[in-house]
Length: 165
Image (cartoon, rainbow, N blue to C red; front, side, top):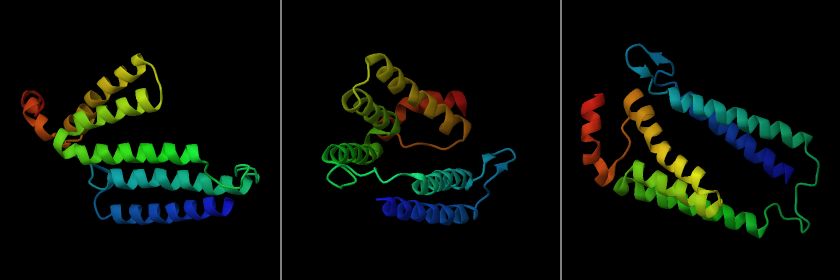
């Protein structure tokens, strides 16, 4: 299993370097009067991914050999089921996004993930589901001027566009 960790970490590190190199086609710094350059987010997110994969790679050399389950498999049935459930919900969220919009699809995914999958309480679930779209709107649309898909909810945003743009 340590070989698998090292192989996957090295692959992700190579992919991160490729993404960083490709992102430098666009400005990766702050463009005066416009905000972050077009390559800033891909570059810096890839840099974070490179550091995280590097940490996994280094840690694999420090890990003992008890990372496998008793029957020798790396993932047990519960882990595979959990990962498949989250992957399926993410795919459903991405498919629904052009129709429902990011501000409906993402909170629905978060609600499912926090309340139904994670079993968290109502206060945490509702506070994150209600505040995340507000944060996303102000971060992406107002600050960075990056429009997120809104689907059929687009007319709801016309008053906000008039107020902020």
